[in-house]
Length: 249
Length: 355
Image (cartoon, rainbow over the protein chains, first blue to last red):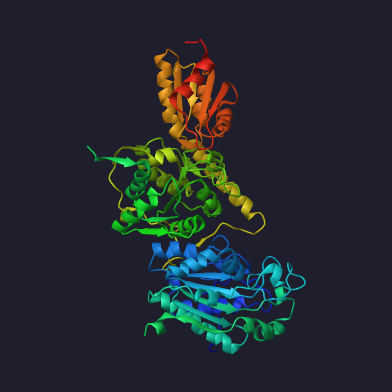
């Protein structure tokens, strides 16, 4: 019998401990496939975040480092500048990238640091139990906004791609989602561009991925995919926000 | 004879880092150490190294974490408030057993304090500084010459024990100009051995992971105990000090860095007046030279601790001497620098007519 589907060599055999319906596993797989397809697995150093995907350092079958919360882009800078032949990616959630690590994100972009940043936006803090994220929608409930995010008291969400598109150094920015097969294919294409840019020494590429967190949202996995289409995508429109390859043509 | 140059302490330590074969600097400007990043911005460029002026000290220390995990010698410098910001990163680096070199040109605190020389970061430097059970090896230079030489020693210790190393200077040492002899041949980074733990891509080997966490029950406890064994080994092998005129002394002054220089002059004044006084200068602050000072306390009746703080190292003097001797203190916090007559007067006060 011919094997037509299996675990990509970019993933270890360790069982992933994500909740049912969580988007992390899908994105992990896309990255793992690309590590193999682009033939970069053996020269890649990956950076795990702090949050649910802290265990990414066990899941990706390449060299990995686990930094302090939010400092991924700084760690990536240190590695990339020390070993320019390595492919360096930083995998981060919304708290990691858009709250505690905002400065590191913006300045890595401003330096056009030749790294690939993968930003999982699920609008909630998963690991710590469903608290408000910098990307939690207005009116959205969390364990620290039980009546819904009150923008007067708790401020507005941050749109990372829109924010970074104002930073000149940024090379590539795209927002995708993983709630439908079509969107998953598009996400893989965006990730491929982001890695390809690094291989070609183009600079800072960030792919934001709207991702399901049924546990944190208090819905079923199926409902969570619908919620992305109906709610999250409305506030965070999908698309390419910056592509200097096209601008420079 | 080796080349000699008149240099600022800050330039001397920066050149020492280059001589030590380090080609990675990341840092954020803060007085009184700005000469270090300025010097590095030129020298790293000349040497084909990496110079990064970062958005914050937090970013700087994490860039060092990345560079050192990638197996490269990496260094940053800052002054007190900036070093406080770096503590998160230093804790992670210690927790991941990575070698980095951090230079603290200490200024007056707490808070924004001032930009005058101080030694008030002693506790922070010698008690870990951040969260968790860890220590940083801490070297205390007292001259531009030592500022030049200690980076090499620092990197050697950092790599031998896989632990962060701190050079604890102060604003006076950094800003003072002194002759520096380039006492050794510069190390070519290409001759430094590859680290068997470095992240470089897993071609032809098992993948490697650098981390400071372990959530499996009992595992972090084991890991901490293993690191504790390392610290015990460091305590046993790496205590460094300098003792002068202590053999016949009725009183020994204990001081490091700038205070050791000032106290040295005070000791000479006292000797000239017939007082039997010596100077004990800790060179490693962690591990503190507990053993040598402990031995000394079996025959020395009086110790005078001189610090540019309200008294922090004095705790280690008490621990080392197990309170066998009488311990006095002369301190100048908040950027105050003692002058030799001040210290001499204290010596005279303690010893009274006992010449």
